[in-house]
Image (cartoon, rainbow, N blue to C red; front, side, top):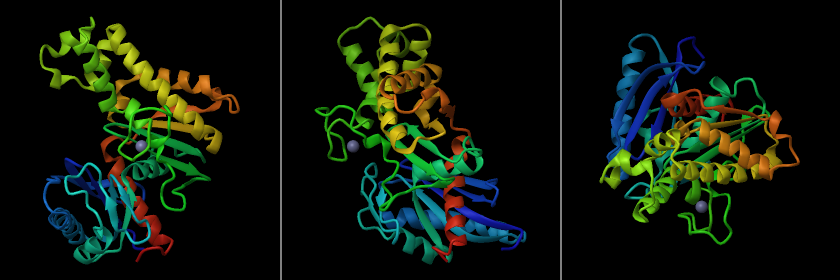
Length: 329
Ligand SMILES: [Zn+2]
């Protein structure tokens, strides 16, 4: 590869799609954010992304760079071999049987690798972020949903069908509420952002005395994890309990992962992770209560490091590594 080799990283989101040119060291040279407008047909969304990607590539190729491959991280299920999308649960059209890899390859004239969005963040954190120095690592991203990723022997481990790392779908309540995946009592239904908001709304409807009410006034649509965190920081018992309960469930789920992987490090990311120390403490406490076969004190607990760029860095890096291994190209 020439010295000025670049890789196109795409992070497909329900609201916005991030597109960036990334070098082999994980540096973002240029980034662009476009509204996904996911209500459109899949073909139109992909066309739009490709157009923007080509524009970025063109600008840099004029300056002597060469773009070798593209990676796209997507929030859903797909075939890891063919790159055909099976289901994007949060997209209105669901993207069933969308040949994403083939469409992008044709439009971009580049080899394309598809990856799950949180697996992409996990890879980025491993190569260039919080997990640089460790050999084994578990990433959990807490946001609208809960996703994860697993690193074993220094590499992202995706498993036979790419399902390794679906931490949001570990059962934490056997008779619990039905999850979108079909199972009952998945972690995601108890500890994601919407799950925390639902508990806060319940407390408000039940007329519980809570600072959350003072923070949002009469506008219940303003209740979000940040507001709950703010109330908790001011000592509000209702908010503290919501965060502690979420942390306990996450700790419980992580205990399953720890006895399977015995990781050196647990990286916590996603929008809800910004809730901060109380959540981290509760997760650590929940883990300690459930985990006896592995010394919890020896596991490094760290926040994700790469922030908003993690998705594009990860998908670009995934494409580069797939290309180097001869899997795409
Ligand atoms: Zn589930």
